[in-house]
Length: 263
Image (cartoon, rainbow, N blue to C red; front, side, top):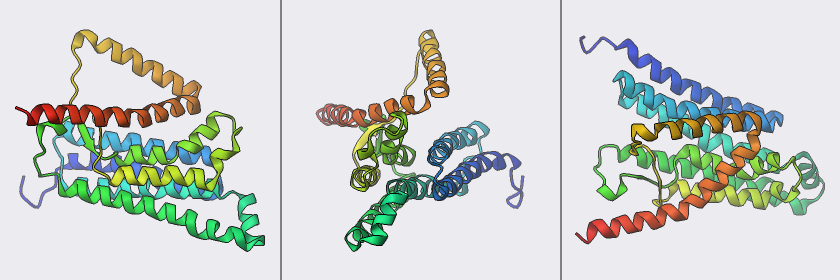
């Protein structure tokens, strides 16, 4: 194959990335129409296809810099822009917008502070993706093997949406979850975690013995069944569990780092 020829296999992982991007953009459309459930689901689907595109590329042996750049652009839209816009549209509901129009005291929150939170999330996501791309060729110390540097973009987008997911899981009972300040706190926290260098668990290099693989299979089947039946409750549990895993990952990282450096 000459340099001018293109391996047709490269189309497949890039097509998967394009699907992830399409879901991210579709989530933005759902947010503008106020369809909160579909907006969240489209972002989750974008995360699923973002996970699959790298797997497909490695399986076919066609990983490329073009694919990596395309993946980053897709991630920025799907997990940096879409979740932020969704949280803004959801927390700044019609009643709050009407209050802002009729009372100038509410306008700084409606068009200022709350929107700054969304811009902050997008900029933090862009910072993370840019750093990730520049570090692809850098060799990290062994104690980073089982950790991400900061929260990955898909996980960051999910954390930003956690108040909305909890609101859906509780049948829209707790109005404080929809408060612009409460929702904005999660958006800012998500942005900080994405742009930070805080270690978070990475399961890429964990190998499970074949004798115990059935346990993982049973867990995945139960998880899929739970998501199909109790979608928002299961997603809420996963979100809270991941949030609680961050302190545990920091403690384990520091322990491993100390162990390696003491040798």
